[in-house]
Image (cartoon, rainbow, N blue to C red; front, side, top):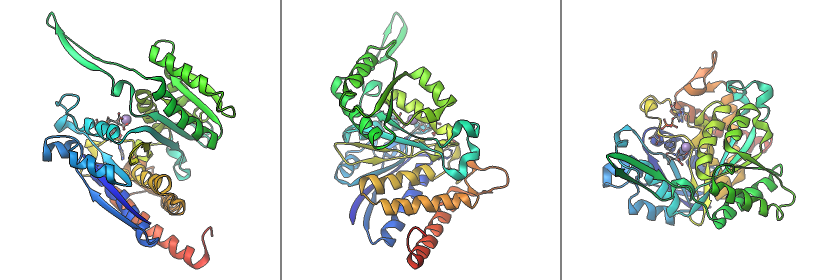
Length: 368
Ligand code: NAD
Ligand code: IPM
Ligand code: MN
């Protein structure tokens, strides 16, 4: 299989975790005789420094032509004083918009060897395996905003707005996802306060007659945040607006032990985008302390969901579980008595395990 992949390392730990994902993709290409052409382009703060803009036209162009895009992370203190619209984060938002990506899927799943690092008691954590389907191209992120100074006082605003069509297209994805899983969908909103949420709830409710086999539930976002912490296994697929999904997904990540573990995939009209959900973690830069797992699992989402290469994805994920099973941990997930290693060493251990298991599979067959 021949695919062209654009890599957008970005800022902070972005380049480190992108290297991990690229190493895994390269290994897949090599061992399974695929051709993955990978090209790097600047985005975020790195792009501001190099070109004066967080999403250079050349970067967006390359992404538009690619089969898939991988992003590390953007942002950092150096660019924090820039106004909204000119910041590194705006580059990512423009990219999502530019590629027409309105779906963002964030799977939050407990990895068996990491059960012990959850802040939840084992009986509450259960076999946590949920998917947050986050609307990605609308809402407050892209609504009208502005600021004025009145009588010497500044006022600024951002607006949350959704159209029926925008809600329907993301809900269609969430319903289908729920149909393919345990047929439970929880739509999160704030319909007791926001009129955009009232439209959201009405629209999703109307669609449930089409998806008759999906059990639809609605929950206010404040309660959802609490229920997620109290009893997360009550959820299967969670559907949310752009803003609520951003917040709930970081909260959900904490349940499995680290934000460094959670991947994401975004879909829409253009090339799909894969990125870990964490940020540029400036305090970890240069320490080789970033957990590459969210990034690696974003790469396996690319293999499976963009290229249909489920055997390759499975190979990486099973190897990853064995490395964790061997007690290797990056600092964020290290427990007493385990082998703390840096992110780059962890990735190298994974690569070695992948090769070892492939040799084993070639000799004795897959599934042994
Ligand atoms: P963050 O996700 O960078 O960090 C939050 C916490 O999680 C920190 O304690 C950090 O050390 C830890 N962490 C994050 N990734 C980790 C990893 N891979 N391994 C181990 N620990 C990890 O969020 P923040 O501190 O709120 O934001 C920092 C910068 O990142 C800001 O500029 C923000 O705008 C940006 N940001 C970017 C993205 C993105 O590019 N997708 C996402 C979120 C935040
Ligand atoms: C995320 C991030 C981004 C978002 C920022 C960096 C624009 O927090 O992907 O979760 O809010 O979508
Ligand atoms: Mn976020």
